[in-house]
Image 1: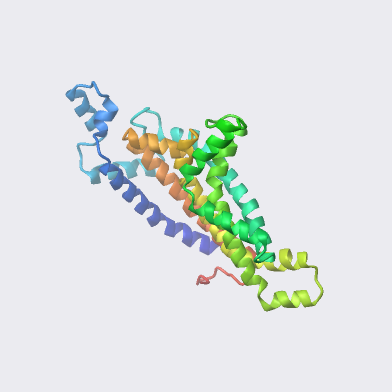
Image 2: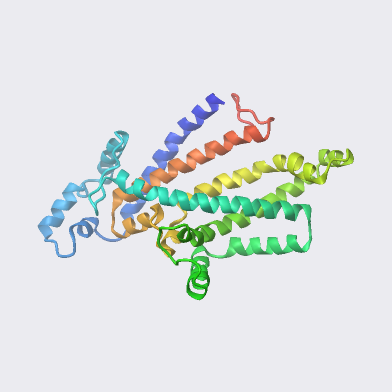
Length: 311
């Protein structure tokens, strides 16, 4: 296990380097002059040129990337060109909000998605099964920004139950978490149902039932654990997606997280903040995938991490 973890961590290094190169190159194709954006609309040409030199924008892209990586290896992500504050400080102020939103949305998706999937599998083709799968299809297909606006109109404008945006009390968390987690809930429900149906059709489940075991024991003790591997895979991938994909939700609900910070930084041509945010999210995504792979071994003892990975 330790050798496998070390190999995965070493393999993550070129992945993260590739992400940094890709993001570094892409954001430099954003239209507009970042030096002028930093200097201000009324800045003189001389001051704009001074800002351009300070930001190394007058140098080649390879020189800028070398300087960025040199500082990054020393733990310095640079300073925001807009606020002049360290990028690390900017991210650490926003990241807990994104983590809270994503974790709440994921908890909602796991609880309701797995429950719906298990009940649908045990009551196949029932009214509950057909209704829940229809709602799951709607949840997967509905755009996040549209759901957010509809929830605001219903629960904030019409009913007045919940605030339409901002951060503060637990009420501010409900609508953005529900909006962000609905698609994941639908996906987990569909995967859980499919995996449970496959396991419930196995011979050892028939044997367990023939022994007179209570159906609840058959479903939750024997079937559910063996059906969890594809579900855990989806959970891990979706949690990483929630962390990096909360941009629309945070924008619609004015939630001060990393996603909204990235949007504001892109509009302001704040290169260091965008690069730092994407790199942090990439590290989290790689870490989550590693944790998911390790959980596999606890769910299925047949999976081992020796010199060769089990396919």
